[in-house]
Image (cartoon, rainbow, N blue to C red; front, side, top):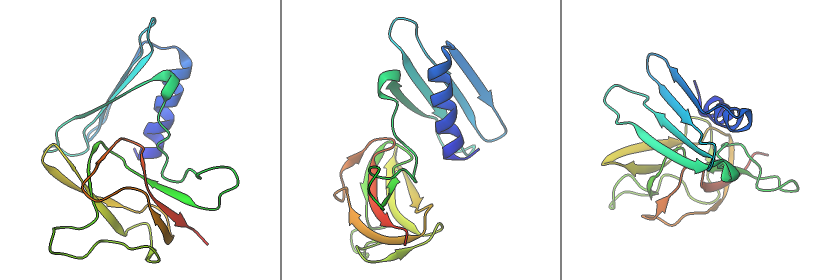
Length: 156
């Protein structure tokens, strides 16, 4: 199950009015809960046996815009690379190394664009889109939220 499918599942459950949905597969566990008085969606994703579960919560009125291919707005030709997890954003693998990508660099779906540290684990984030980096939207070493835009990419 990829990130887009998880996002679509969250949106579907939020609209359906279901109070709780659980989905378990070999490598992923997802629980989505909504309350009747105050709608709240909680997602727990575990992708590998050694990776701790990461809870993500948002009110249904503020369902996060988390798709990596969402356009900034209707008239924009740029695509956002967004954060798949909550953590600390780093542009380089270590302080003495060069950054993963600069403005003007070309990326493809397997290109590593940054690292996000979550719960003492350093997660390499891949582009998921092809194109040219137009803008870096987050400063190195700052906290990021789930679904927060990190880079703008020109797909042309």
